[in-house]
Length: 404
Image 1: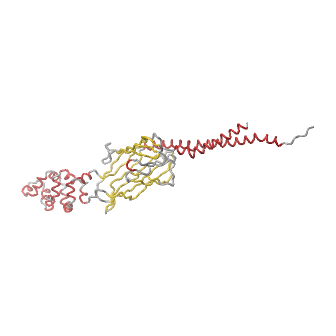
Image 2: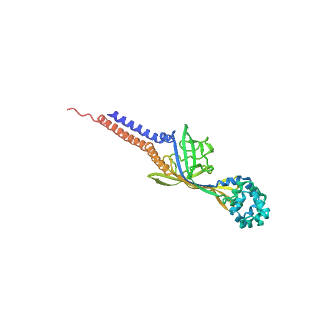
Image 3: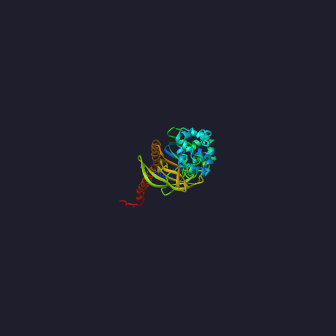
C-alpha cells in the first residue's frame, strides 16, 4: 500500500511540474500564426480623391503655357469674358478657331452674326485682346485643351493651381492574405488588395490592384526584412497584447509606422475585446512633386482586438486625410472613411471566440487542471505514505510487555 501512495505522490509531482512547464515554456512557443493562415477582409466606405480631370490639366502642354502667363489668365476674370464663356454659340465657335478669328478681325463678318449678345461681346476690346493672345491661340490649336478650360471644375485652377477639385467615390475593398510558406518563426504571406467603385464595379482610377509579399514574425506579427515596400512595425497585434505597450502599425498612406495605443475595453457580440486607437495630426509627408507644397496627414483609426490571440476583429477608419498646406489653409486631396463590412466583422468575431476558447483551454484551463490534479495526488500520496508508516513506527517504539 505504501508504494501505491508513493506512486500517486510521484505522479502528482510530475503533473505539477508538467503543468508549470507547459504554461511557462511550451505553450508560449505554440502561440504563433498558423502555417495555413488565410484571411479575406471585405471593407466598405468611401474615398475622397482629386478629380481625375486634374491629371489631364496638369499634363496638357497648351494649358501649361496658359497658366504660365498670369496676364492672360487674369483676363478670364473679366465679367464680359465670364459671360461669353457661358454662351453656347461661342462654345461652338471655339471648335472652329479659324472662323472665330475671322469674326474678330473682320468687322463685315462679325456684322453677320445673328446672336446680338455674342456680336456685342466679340466686338469688346477685352474679348478681342483675349482671343488674339498667343496662349489662347495655343488652346485653339488643341481642342482637348479648350474643352478642359471650359469645364467648370478647371476654371478655378487657372487662377489658383492648388484649387484642386475632388470627388467622393463609394468603394468596396477586398484584402486577401494567405500563407505561402514558413521558415522557423517566420511566415511568408501574399497580400492582394483590390479597390472597386460601388457604382460600376470597376477599379478606382489611380488605385490599381496591389500585390505584396510579406515576411512576418509568427508570434509578434512584426514585419521582418524581406517584406515588399520596406514595411516595418506590425501587421497586426501580437498574442496577449500588453495595454501598457504602444504598437507601431504600418500605414500605407504614410509609408511609415503609426502608433496604436490602448484606450479601453469593449464587448462585441459577446466577445470581450481591447480597443486601440491611432490618432495623428499634421504628420509631415514631404512635398507634392507637382505643386511644390507641403503635405500633411491626419488619421483617426480605431481597432478592436481579441485580447488572447491579438486577432483584429473590427476596424474603422473614422477619417484619414492627406492635405496640401497652402498659404490660405489646408486642402484635403485624399480622405478615406471605411469600416470592416458586416459579414467580415461577424466572421472575425466568431473566429475570435474560437481563438479565445482554444487558447484559454490549452494555455490556462487544461494546465491548471493538471496542476490541480497533481496537487491532490501529491498531497494524498504523501499523506498515504505517512499513514502507512505510522503503525510500524509505533510498533518499533512500544515497551516489551512482562510475561506471566
